[in-house]
View 1: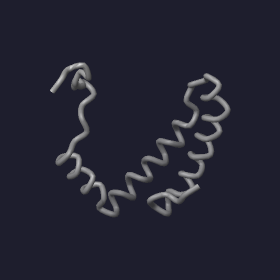
View 2: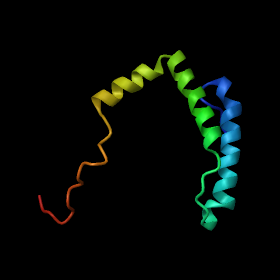
View 3: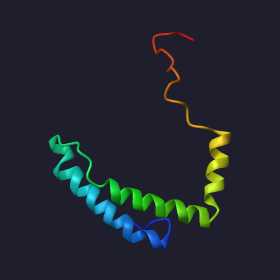
Length: 84
């Protein structure tokens, strides 16, 4: 498994990756979609967000979202049957 964006987060990333991979292979693929690793993910995400803020990357991400925001889920997709 790879390291995290921040050295302080690598242990949390490895714990989450291990939990997720076990859940995915042993439960999800067999039809059990009950999430099991949410707390580990929340801890890891919080660590990553702190690291991004410390490195000033959070501002770059905010700026890029302003320049090219993700489309909203309520926007309609073009009908593929319509001709241009």
